[in-house]
Length: 125
Image (tube, rainbow, N blue to C red):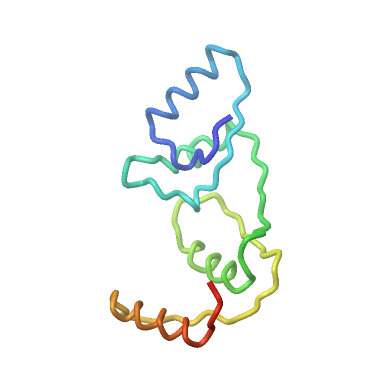
């Protein structure tokens, strides 16, 4: 079994497949190419896409962590990605507050916004 397989690089994939063949094992991968964060070090998310025919895929499309507004915004952004395995996440939690987009904020602007929000919501961490 491999977890976070979307972040595996070509050498890691080679080793996993080699071990699988030597051991005559079934390979079970947990992955979400939309959540890959290690492209900078050679993670090959395209491996899962290129080799889909070799895998039985089970899609988990319910997000239990984020509210509906966040999941909707993420779906909207991710839908523009090229070469992806199509899926649409659905939030388990209702939307509680709209998302505000703040353009052109530098570090100082973000710090000011955090200070303001902290004053407006004392005790919230």
